[in-house]
Image 1 (cartoon, protein in one colour):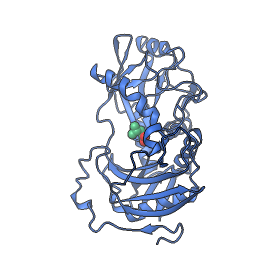
Image 2 (image 1 turned 120 degrees about the vertical axis):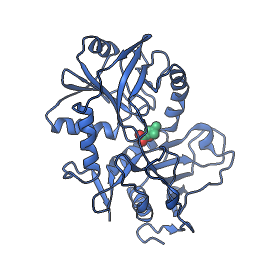
Image 3 (image 1 turned 30 degrees about the vertical axis):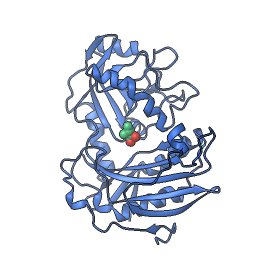
Length: 356
Ligand code: COI
């Protein structure tokens, strides 16, 4: 038992750690030894355990598999120079997870379950946090409905799991993205702001079509007019135009409230850069590319970190963006973010949780 949460602990008989080449890890393919599991039934969270990462028994009638009552989070852990494990902004992921839970009628996860599970799991698998530049331990908390019932109603039971993966870069090269003018990721009043599994499922087919045309990803536009830029599905979007950092605002409930997005904007403001969170039209971006006032465009996300964009496809034309050089804001902000994450800069924004 682990005291605080009464977590039952069953460790792997042999760690898989020595079989991993940390200098060559593909994002999302390598899993650490253990996972934290909790169940919700009779109105409370119970049965806390840390188990070897592995398969679960799921009945075919499990309602979460049918109607998509499933939410997730993504956050990362790093090591500082003393080998201590630092988690970046876990409180924000915790809060967002409960915002997502509310939107699709799932129970709230108590803070002690989310943070306690995460902390105990990281204590046990701390050696899985890689130290090589550009790598981190990706933490994936998620929750899904477990009632065995195929009528449509909110489930009465749920499972919450956290597993972890050592990861390298999500995107290995600057991106060629296409502005989507037909398909829609989110509508006002929908679930776009929440991290619900269905948002990602619905994006797969349009993204596949774009990939067949040679693009890495889509830039989603608003579902009403296809006139304003929203986000990219795997990341929020930012544009530097005439030295102003511009990003779609979160006022409409169609865009994920990205934690990396917020971190980038916080650092930019701290550096005295003018930031505008507002509606960004496709025309504004196309004009800025043509008039050469667009200095850089990039995505910001936990998995994607800062993903530079080299080409934007719109209306059948591929617009080439300025070359990616070391003096770009996005390069500098990525370096600075890495320093905050690894405890190399004073934690003046209160972003770091140390696992002691
Ligand atoms: C993340 O950035 O953590 C995400 O959840 C995006 C996912 C597509 C990997």
